[in-house]
Image (cartoon, rainbow, N blue to C red; front, side, top):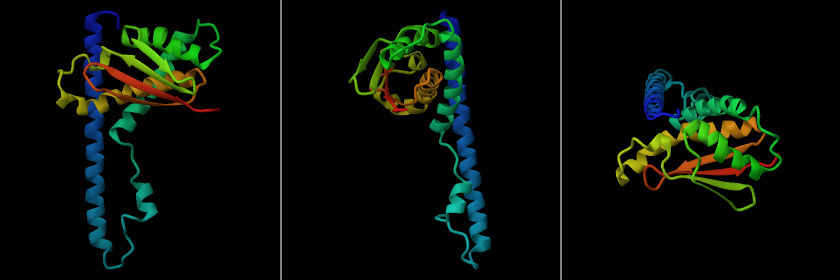
Length: 191
């Protein structure tokens, strides 16, 4: 991903993945509604089918678009981090690990180092990227900020997967206030 052409191809692929997953979730939700409507009509006389029924809820539990994208990113992050970290010395602290993520891993995945890393020294880290590769092609404007959530789910998963491959369990949340800047908040889980 070191050339502008390959970065563009990577961004276009990312956009298509988000679009595909969004369409899949919409289809699944429509099928659920059709099935429930049909079954409600058939079973109404017996009073046995309710949406509050735990069996029905468990049957229809599916991930949201963000959950599905985060899971894809998790697998990608694990694989890439194993490749990038194979020649790295053992990382002895969470701060060293986060520095590795911001420098080496970030450069490999997003073609540049993260702009800033902050911590409260209590297991919470925040990574700032002022020109985040996955948001570079977005138009600048407040109306597009709200649409960026799905586009930050995959990179959040990539970061979480990378940390997992380094034996760190974490919760990663992403946000943006102005495009193309992104902020990733990482809460380390105690083992």
